[in-house]
Length: 516
Image (cartoon, rainbow, N blue to C red):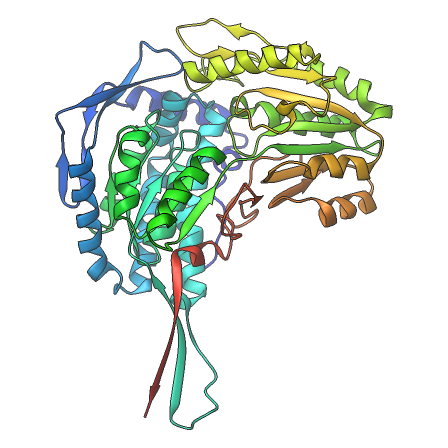
């Protein structure tokens, strides 16, 4: 078995018109305005209450109506998951690999419709939406590959004390996991957490973000179609503040991706009862260093894509840049000219780079952060305004310079398209400032000097680091290539998603010995 990344865009090189037509036809096929049930065991359940989900592109577009789960339905979901675990934990790893590969193929066949759903649901442009579906396929293929090459994580140990002794190390699943997913990668991040649990023999109850529940619904349906047994994957919807505590009380493990504050709160409540496993990724405040030995064209392209791709709504988004004083003004001039080219608007259109932010709350945060930057004597050199268009949530990509380094915006994850740029004198100063935050998710440097790059890699405190990455200075990690996860407050297990050790976070070791 060999793993290769999906990379749809590369496959359509020279056939770009065909790619666009496929995506646009898929947009027409997405069913809108339907009511979706909970999926618990073998049942599809409708409750007495529902909530509406509307597109951030245009709030007159009704994505669908989704059920509001309560304590009874959460209890039912975990009973189904725990019952399924009894047999699923004993299922051969080879069978789990085959089911995962079937799911990958089903997603591959439906990739354009799944991508179109993401665009409608959270406002990604078509390139980023198709890349997310590719990432989802990669997770299924890569985790199947990792499980296979490790033969289910069972290893014979040396037995030298006694002639008749036979010892093995066997990794075993914990049980039923609560999987709590974010809005920004509703298919890919939901997949890495849920699949990490179930391919290793656990079961899962998945709660997607209430902003993006349709992609997770599609994922669960595909996994069941591929052959994951009923109860192995379950799907519940509703407000996190109303149902997450019910999930935590019943689960044997928790996987969460979201903000630091929410993650810390969940973790404290979760381990209060029992020492249960947690897999968490909690965002970032991702720095880029641009030295006087950088190729400025590379630096501007990478920073622009890293900061403003998907409106900065990635935990890996470039959010602060430290530029050597001698090139600062030239860098800003080039960056501002690049930002001026940004096409903002409906991401269903071919030429749009920046679609909407996710909801009204994000718009209000954006406005508040701009006000705080100006109050803090920062200079908004471009952007800073809300764009009223089509009843959607559109804001301008924004670059702020001159904000004092003691201002709290330098240390706070913003999750909107605002980039802070500051001056530094040396690489040592830049690294000191880059590391002087609670987070440590991603980071980048632009320098053509190998010694500067080596110094950066040796001293930066982050889980995913890049040098001279033009496709996104701090973004765009691919499963099997750049394992994705953070240090400090950005991570929990130290084992990154899409990497060779991630599945171990969902397993515990048992030493088995028998004697003839």
